Image (cartoon, rainbow over all chains, first blue to last red; front, side):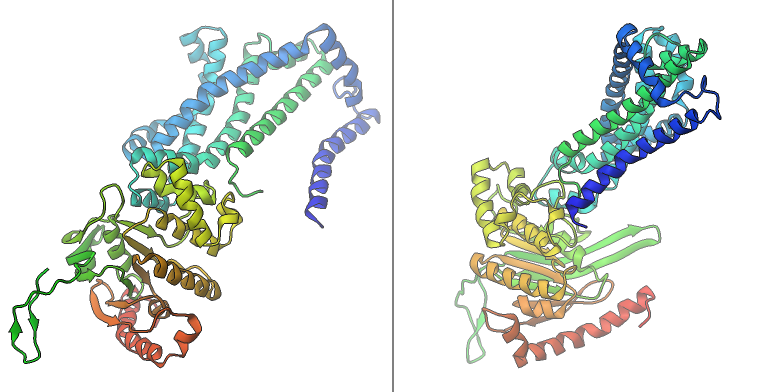
Length: 256
Length: 282
């Protein structure tokens, strides 16, 4: 099999799995053996989707959720990368922050929502902060791990040429840890989506999570399904976007 | 430098002879590492003069401290006793550059960026860097790969990049720590030839640490044999083999065999001792 054929086969297989899943769902639903009110066929969701786009501003809800994810993601990821790099480079900073980081890392961050609401009120900021909190530690720890995993030989090379600490950071620690940073960011993106939808369940105020929860509450099951599918697509596209950015930022990584 | 020279009749003549001072003068050099099990002496009582334009090889059993010695000369390790005097480098250039053992080429930089690395740290401008590195990449045969990343290259090509990177800063002293240890024999021969050619062209002073007697004889003017743990100088063997050298002629030279035998005789007991100390089967 040539590389080209393999690439083609890969694409076909990638597309095949969701189509197959939808097909099975469709067949089971149409067979009439399950209650179509709760398990509607995917094809029957099409009209619902159209109505939601035309009459109910589905894209507005998507945009609102996306905004929350991206704002919280940025607020958590940027400090996470910075603190993670510092923890990787400096052992005193690592020794000082490590106990806090590992302890808080283990708490399901959504459990902190009441605290955040008390501190920040019920506005958008509270949602961003809870997302930021929930991803900060995974990004920081992953980044730190990336720095620590670097072969000390690279440090020796920089020192041998007379490089100072800043050189070491700029030319070794930062570029060398980018693959680990992206691993952390990919995990973080998943967390962010979960937490945003979670907060939209708990405190519905627009967004795809609210749409799912409220549709369920009024037994508007088809709308709920549309919300679920939209959430899945959003997660998929976000990861795809991140992969694209990684390919631009880390061109030196072995092709997978 | 003044030295007293004995004349033919055996009496000391007070005539002054000017000789080239050594590039590096090492006196009583030692390194003790503090470990959980107590202090461990890695290297002890090294006295060594490294002459200008000399190609020096250091051989010794595994773990004899030869890499520690090289790292002390490079300034990457601080001696716990003795001193190293390196002289006469212009202030803006490092006295030495090292070709490290294993994968030392930065995977996140292209071949060109890697080769320019030392120059960039020194603050050389882009045009200056390009000029120097272009000709070096030409020399090591990697000019067509200047935009490639290390993962796209073979092991031997990566080590060529490391050599180019070290030479780019025009060091007075080139240090090589097992530079070809991870390469297959044929690639090693090719790279040894290249190092000899480059050395012939640039007249650099080179110290190579190796576990291969064969490599030491192929490259060096002088071979230092080290004792097993702790590392000290056991023997110094001059290698008067004609230059320029090539792999085939060298190996058919009876002198090569004689020198090999002499060094192996010296080294053998040390290797056995090192293995006994580390608990490996003999």
